[in-house]
Image (cartoon, rainbow, N blue to C red):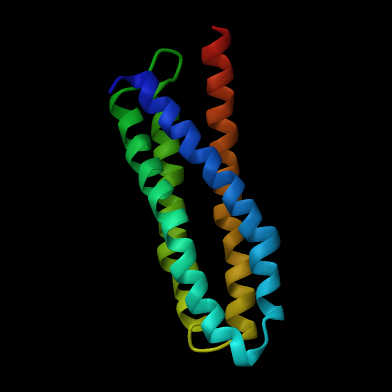
Length: 147
């Protein structure tokens, strides 16, 4: 696989996640408090089961291709940008592991306003980081195509 292919894979995985995280942040998470206490545990359980494949696979592709860009930076994509991109992905994974997953685990026991607000509030970290990554990758795609 060459640097251009790795860049394209990373660009696509990143923008997939940008779209998904905004939908989750603005729509999905904001509807969670409307489920009702008697159905909430099932809803949260189903959420985890259904969203995992559509999130985990692209996140894995993104982090692997971000690491690949550090090794195989294509012409027009500076190595410093590859390192920043990888650092952003690592920060997203850390936020997921240490903030969002624990809040989801709390919500698996039943709706808690504090856990719900914590989830929605801390998810802005991932939303912002993925948006920054997407804009950065888009900038370099534009630069590389016009150069």
